[in-house]
Every structure is written in structure tokens, then in C-alpha cells.
Length: 103
Image (cartoon, rainbow, N blue to C red; front, side, top):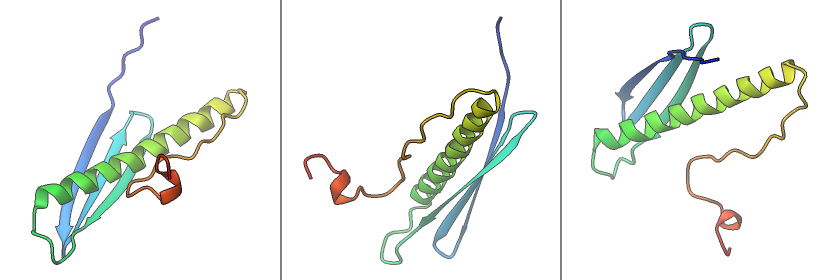
């Protein structure tokens, strides 16, 4: 049986004192989730608002994605299925030395 739905996503960006903040809202029609992300500019760096927007938006979308996977896992478990294995989820930023290949 075909299944087609439309989910609406709204992304809000704002900057204050060298910090760009993002809020992304997902409306599925039955559920609304909100993700948040920040990007902080070093005062010594050139002010390039687009970079702050990209980082903050990307981090907000990652936050939203983690929430959506958590909701799906909870729903799966609610259907009586065995609990899914929770894997470590990647975070943004530089990898720790023990996470780098060969290191």
C-alpha cells in the first residue's frame, strides 16, 4: 500500500554577540520536534555570517535527527519489538585521538 506524507520543516537563524543560534522545527502533522544548534565565532576570526549559519543550522538538524531516531526507537519498542541496540551517535567536532584511524 503506498504511503505518502508531507512534513514541514522551519529553520530559524539569529545572531547575537558572535554566536549564531539555530532552531529547527519539524511538524509531522501529529508530532512537533525542535532541534537547537549554536556556532561561536572566535573574536580573532573574520566575521563570515554564512559560516555561522551553516554550523548552527547543521548542528540543529543533527539534534533534530537524534530526537527523531529516539522517537522511532521508542515507537518500535512500543509495538512489542525487541529493544534496538543503542549505538554511540557521532557528535560534531574534532575526533578524539583514540577515534582516529590508526591512532
